[in-house]
Image (cartoon, rainbow, N blue to C red; front, side, top):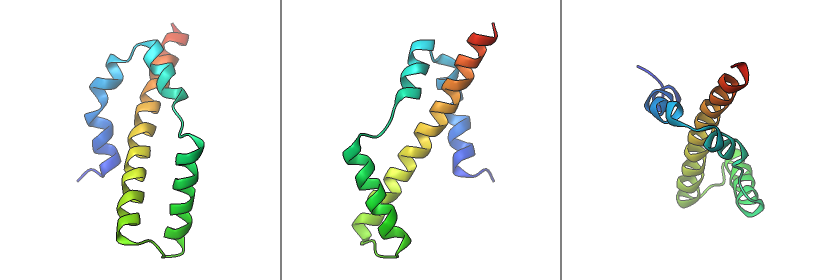
Length: 87
């Protein structure tokens, strides 16, 4: 059975094929702002210490899932832009 990242990659294939060069560039520029990154870092530290509350664990897992989704979309954006530069 495929793992979640592989399933997401397959599910998002049509999105990757539909990306315009401008949309691909915008996806590659997507980053967490300083406040969100600080929150992620804090939750990661607490997770490594085994000190997350159930609510914090749920939030952290949601952030990890969002980061995985964004990473897959960014990989697809790189493919789009590589195809343009190779042409």
